[in-house]
Image (cartoon, rainbow, N blue to C red; front, side):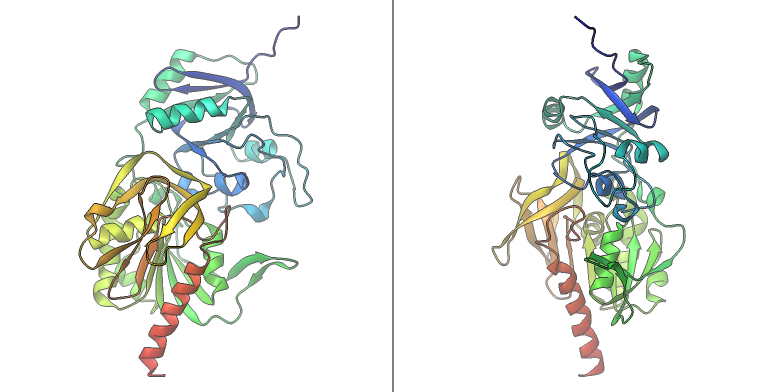
Length: 389
């Protein structure tokens, strides 16, 4: 009987549990928090979502890599997730849009992949013990110092108290006019904007910015550390708070004063997504807490408490807003049907609202895309009042 090929990748959990498999992409070792994602598509968008900073992603869907990779599907300039773990080794791409294989794409960008893993067992471990700290290593020779890997996993400090938005935000402000992808022209550009929107970049996905442009916004993106004065100096018609990684309480040290300043000095519509939702909640006086294993996937049911409608949404967050701490004048609007956690809020007396999930659907369903239209309508209504029309 022939001997099995020697494993070329090892995933070590902080509790000493080991998973062996076959490495692809870059070689080396990284440490991170491990989360699982239940989406069936969109691995490239997931790997380039800045919200995954400091995390390794294991995919519960077994076939990953089938459609390869291409520049159009990146949500950021480079992958942000530290690595990926999958059940089956990625195959050669079979899609007309592919420009390279997943393995080559990861290797060129310094990210480690690992295949041949029992991802169901791994996912159960995450659910039972919470998102563990791990070390992921890829060595083509299969030589692993297990004690050192476990020690590296244990030395990871975790995401609590960590401000990662400053690591993924833009270095300086810029304009964005690219709209959502559409057949057959691909990405068109917004040539006739009807409103000025300032977007605060805590780790903004490109498709969120495209969605804003697609509803008529001229988008100016500002770094996460922008002040209320920076925002208001641009004379916007609305303010958007983006998604992003890390502990919201840490990012809130500078984000909360900015949001409070905008709310105090203007009547502008404000719309937040993901970390932006948490930043808005903190600014209004609520609190956030770390979740056991978070919500990561494109199949999360969320109920709109005001309409009774259930939407299937795309999510990626490891912290949540504690709905019990929402102050008077702030209403909970959406809840997760998985665990009842908060998924949306709004102020009762002005057009300020946010959601925990990702209505830009990249990847994910488009059930919630109407939220961008709601933001655009709030802006249009305010402009109409100000002009008396």
